[in-house]
Length: 114
Image (cartoon, rainbow, N blue to C red; front, side):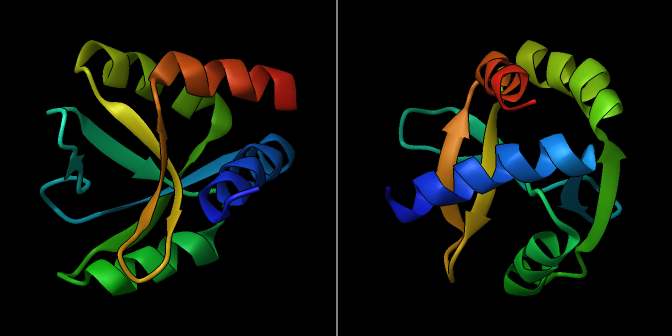
């Protein structure tokens, strides 16, 4: 399994167990990444430590916050789908790279993992 694949598997396993999703933000919101195909991805992490590493890499005063899995699934995923965002899963490494899924793809994988 690739590094990104193992990070994605860890995301679904961890989140299914802890029922918490982590993200980084500042007063203006969370950073997104623009892909070559024009889609934007909004990243989330399965543990506070993973999100803290991302905040440190990105810098710029980002702080770590969390959402319950239920709130994330029921409120955040529909908003992301409506806005055409993909979901970055446990991005890692010095450049914060990893897999992106559609919001529905994330929900489908969570249903299987949980």
